[in-house]
Length: 329
Image 1 (tube, one colour):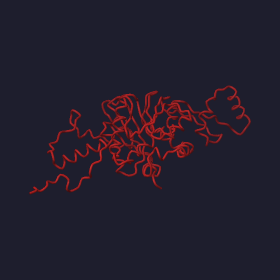
Image 2 (tube, helix red, strand yellow):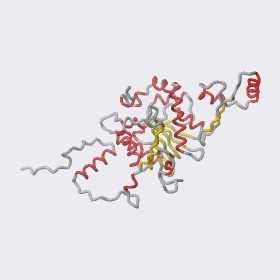
Image 3 (cartoon, one colour):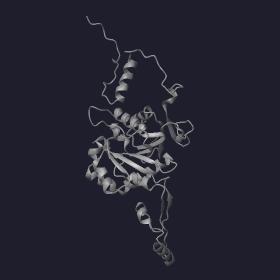
Image 4 (tube, rainbow, N blue to C red):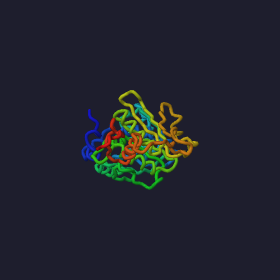
């Protein structure tokens, strides 16, 4: 089965039909809710925060952010008349007036089930951005709480620096690994996204990006782009080695509340692979200077890498790259 990002651009793939089909699927709703709650757990926010939802789609993740911090309960009812009477008394008293709003998420439960859950430390205020007009139209029809912006994250994150406390992205970043036109590249799109995301978060802010890498090359390309942008980064895998494996990229900006360790937010979690290139940097935080001769193969490779980060198309390196030419008569 082909991956949707390999066939069409996101704004074309998610037309009116696909957007409605995606939003009304109970399986997708459950998976999206589960991954958003996991992202909130990894963010570990101290209280209500201002959050950016990148690739918000129809607002499924945003609804979890809005409901975060609320208690979801469903009363247990028995088969005997006494239990039924208790439920009737509760309805008359109006104590459970919010149950109808939250029970749709647990519509698959039987009447004998009982759930009491505390989600996050919200409620959070959020802004969502997405490239698909059809997805955002569905979100408007569903009357979601967050503000919505039509924008391509591959062109950057168009918000004032330091605007957000945190950011999440669910099942969206892998779309950046494909270039829709010949005048751009996956590396350039990833670079613009992570640079813009880094700038939009306040110092000490955090971001969690859940994505589905196609292979190890894509996974490395995404994580390296995040580290180059300045993030402290860690990779977390849920259910590794199974078809249900979920990959989370946990990012931090500056030291914040992590006692000087930019990756402290994930350092105490089991199974987290810390990705941070600061070991190759000097004491002043800058990359150690290396004497690279201008015109050499290493110098050319470095220039090509710089051009790729800017989204330019460069020729592939070969055994002839940097090789001296014979003197022409």
